[in-house]
Length: 214
Image (cartoon, rainbow, N blue to C red; front, side, top):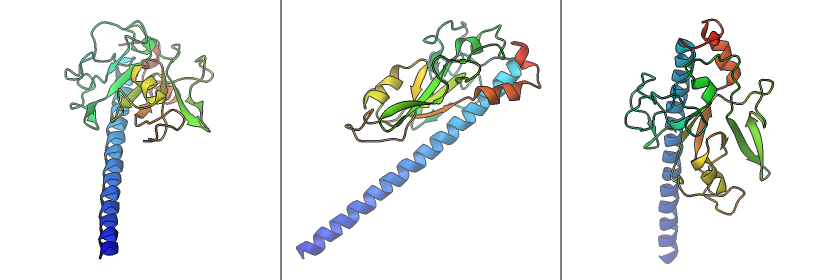
């Protein structure tokens, strides 16, 4: 009887864990879909206006900051969903964070001359390697003009990689999620998407947006 009860409890636990993991995967899939839509909205805005929008200071307003941002810190905040014509945009129950290269959000920007400044790294064999951009950022090996971040349960906690993302304004980390505190970089669950400089330039090249803001 005790053996049967133990087996029953283990089966129930396995079903519960499997269901939890399935729900987490579904939530992450939904978050990535929302983030992908936001990335397309940012690209469309750049094509229309000749620049990327500035971040919103408050996630509830959704409006870009009316004051031009002159530094990486000032150009990091929340996704300006209302300015982009999107509904209130959240992922995993939290507002999306957004960081844009100052030169790409400037009122007089010329995108084909501006150097994007956002880098994204991942871990391989415990080492951080660039997956977008390099140091220093150049137009030969371009970095990203903008990054969108969806934080998870480890926001404000987690390992060194998570903590780095929490305060990052130019250099971000994207890697598979993990609950293991002792592995390289520690526990991590951020999701990131970013704009490709080459794709943005291709999309803008036939509209005149490369020549400056409108």
